[in-house]
Length: 205
Image 1 (tube, rainbow, N blue to C red):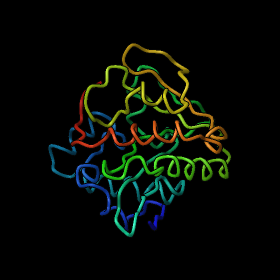
Image 2 (image 1 turned 30 degrees about the vertical axis):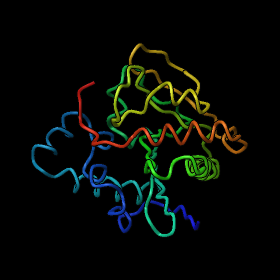
Image 3 (image 1 turned 120 degrees about the vertical axis):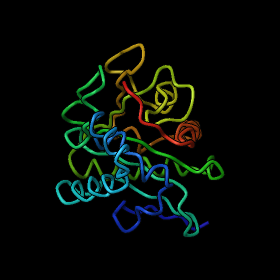
Image 4 (image 1 turned 45 degrees about the vertical axis):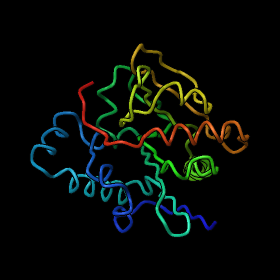
C-alpha cells in the first residue's frame, strides 16, 4: 500500500470531498458564512481563504493518498486566520497553539494508522514552525458528523480540556506527545477522524 501525505494547495483542493470543498464553517464568521451559502459562492470563498493563508502563513493542511486515491485530509491554522473560532464561548485559542479546524478519513480506510500518521505529520510541521500545541473546540453533545469534532473522541486521543464548557469545551494536545503514540491511540484517532463523514452544515453556535 503506497501512501503519501502532501500539503494542501489549490491544485489538490479538488481531491477533498465536495461537501468539504463547499463548506466555509471555519473559514468565515457566521454572518459571512451564511451570506456565502445564500449567494452560492462557498467554494470560491474556500479557495480564496486557502490561497490567502498559503501566501501569508504557509501550509494549512495535508491530503492523504493511498495508491494515488485521496482518502483523507486535515486542516489547521493559527486562530487569527479562523474567523469562526471567535464565535465559541471558550475562545480564544492559546497564543502558542494552532487550531485544528477539521479532519476526515474515508470510512473504508480507517484502522490502518492513517490518522496517526496524519496528525504526526502535522505535529512535525508545526514543531518546526515553533508551535507547542494544537487546540480544538469539541462538541460535548455530538450526535452526528459535523464541522466540530466530538469532544469525547478528542479526549480519547490525548487532548486535555483547558477551558470547560457544557457544549463547546476547548481542548489542547501537546505536539511532542504525538510523536510517540501507541496503537490504542492510533485506533481511537482513526475513529475520531472517520466520524466526519456526512454533509457538514453551517449551524449557529
